Image (cartoon, rainbow, N blue to C red; front, top):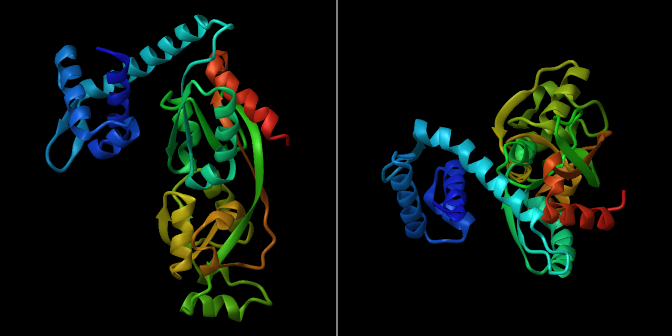
Length: 297
């Protein structure tokens, strides 16, 4: 059993899809499958149930997640204690963020970090920002970009890197929804008559729920969607209005297909999150320090 196999196992346990897991690990699906099989032989039990259509964790596989995560965390901690200050910093670091964040924040951060620490291997994983803190808290990823919640979980550190207004958007294409929006553009919007594209969970959903409660209506939900970018896409097609950070609109390929509704909006703060104890790792500490110098809020 080696650390690469543990990383492959965690990637497959997270995605439950050989192609996506192999892409994340930068290996071919046959290589990933072979490594998982070798790991199962060494463990002495099946970790996954798999056929041509699906992959599922067995009970042994679910239990093995904690072992794999703690083993890799202990290994990184040990390596950090063996760092020679006279040699270039080496190691690897994983960062989880939305697609929008890669353009808005992470490109500049990785560019600066790469110049300072060229020997460090950087892994970027994209997904729904509502999962960011959970990805870090579970130990799956070292660092993540997250919208600042009202209360940070214990043991999580936060570093602000940006802000963005929250805006409601609707379609620009001719459709019944646009007709309703245009009809009330100069007056009170009939929120109870509009369909909403809602996030599945997270800080953004909490903000929208609070808005609806303040205006005394229950939203008519067309769909619950994972990810801000998908919310913009559905809004552009006239399925419903959506509330997203303005920075998502700026970076979206659908920015000309949506309109920002004339509505007073609030602001959210965006930052990096990591486990407090991970800041003792020189690699994570180096990224944190680079971000502090780059994003001075």
